[in-house]
Structures are given as structure tokens and as C-alpha cells.
Amino acid sequence: MSGTTLWRLRGSGDVVVAWDQSPKDRWPLVAAISEDGCRSWSQPKIIVDTGGLQVSYPSVTQDREGAIVVVWQQDLPDRKSREIRMARFDRAWLLESS
Image (cartoon, rainbow, N blue to C red; front, side):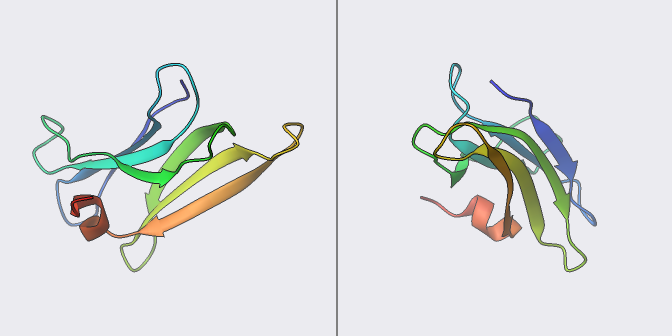
């Protein structure tokens, strides 16, 4: 399991968390949101499911417009190299039912 990252959204008490959801693998990368001071969380939303390629070291922030930005390191198919990936989404996406 890789590290977990938290970010308090500007203008609210909401907190976003991103982590790899497997207890033994480093995929999929998911995010959830808490609207009550981290006492409860939304259902995790999959940001990326690599199907076996490791994701690690996620980080969360917000851009100037308030969008949530998650950045992480991801193995490439050759499993010898990695690249930095990112996803940009809003609070509403985290709260959508799957």
C-alpha cells in the first residue's frame, strides 16, 4: 500500500483523500470526500485502475478555479520506468453515484 494524501477544500470544511485501495497491490487509485470533518466518507471513486501497473505517491491539491487535482507516479508497461500522471475533477464527481 502506498501513502494516503488529504486536502481540505478551500471555502469549506470538506476534505478529499486519495489512496490506492488494495491492501496488497498499488492499484486502483481512488478518491473520496468527507463533508463532516473526516468522521465519514463518500464511496471511493476510481481515478485510475491500471490493471496491474503500480500507482504510488499520490498528492492532492486544488487549481485556481477550485478543481481537485490528483497527481501520482505510475509504472509503465515495461515495468522498468514510470511517469507522472494527473487527474482533474470536481467535488460533484466525487459525490456522484456509480
